[in-house]
Length: 319
Image (cartoon, rainbow, N blue to C red):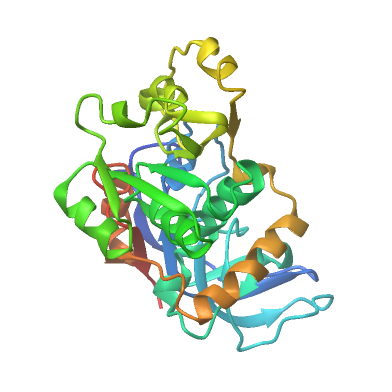
């Protein structure tokens, strides 16, 4: 099979297309013919061995993907050969023609979605759902800020919050990003590259019940001042350190929580997938794809996913 691989921790340019042996599966595993692979920042961390991530070599990048089941292990139940599925945290890498998947991280793909759209689900929508409902305990009527809302997780969070009847404010860094958010149904868009962009919300009367934060090292200290009483910041993304004043938390009885998919148990993942599927089938949730790459363009996708000004998901077309 064709696969993109790297033989040691390194830069995106070290990735190369190889002819690899189609992986075999164990009795409790699934072999999926990959139609499309998602590209997320974590893929670049694993490839480069940064942020406490590690792997074995040769390494095929890609946790998310979607495709068709071509083989089932003898002990696998609940799936069928020929079934369309999406997956996350697969066992062999999704930037290849075939991927070995665990039943605990493989889910039916809604008929309304293409493989390219299915490749956008695993990390972005699961993270968004857990951040909003599992960690921040957001509910209908809450005032929510999605701080850095134009990337894959941000768009998913916006769609979920709006679908649940929340009062959504979202931030963008470019006019194109602001236009995208308004097209998603956000009526109040703020520009996070402007000085004091949170100032209008930094009182108990105007603050947020929930802030979903995509760059905590840059924003967390100001986020805390923009919470209302009992508010919560859920940290989804961070690339450094930040200094805060704990009295900003104390004055509001507020909290900060972390969000990491690696901590979710399979049972919770399954429940999230079940909650999301009807929303995809009805078109309430719809992934926004910024760009589709060919498999040989994976290195460029790894470069692009870390750039600022994201406008949705990056996907590699495999099948």
